[in-house]
Figure 1 (cartoon, helix red, strand yellow):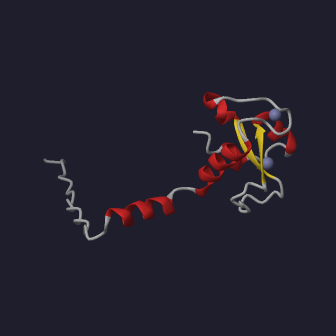
Figure 2 (cartoon, rainbow, N blue to C red):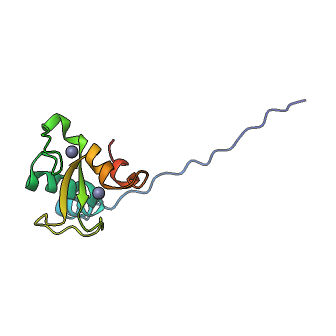
Figure 3 (tube, helix red, strand yellow):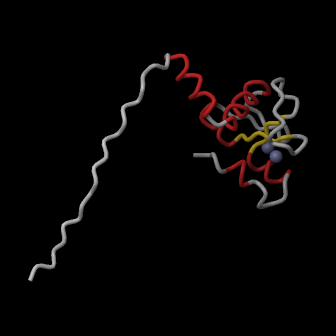
Length: 111
Ligand SMILES: [Zn+2]
Ligand SMILES: [Zn+2]
């Protein structure tokens, strides 16, 4: 009596990716895919500096993950390139600024 079954795995060959795209096209696509969340964050840190707008605590490059970007109008989609809607707040002040539990978005990308 043989109870062993041979499972059949269908091997699918990956289709060859057509390489008629130029390198520039690929780079552009990658940029479009990348999350805008991290890019506005970096920009805000550059514009306003590594300092909390509320408690004036300064951060260095290694500590900058403790600095978060607050949207003054409360709309994370409103990201003017001049940074007028952004405020850099340390995580403590930011938590203070919002009521607790509403900051999932801000802390989810901490890494
Ligand atoms: Zn602060
Ligand atoms: Zn905020």
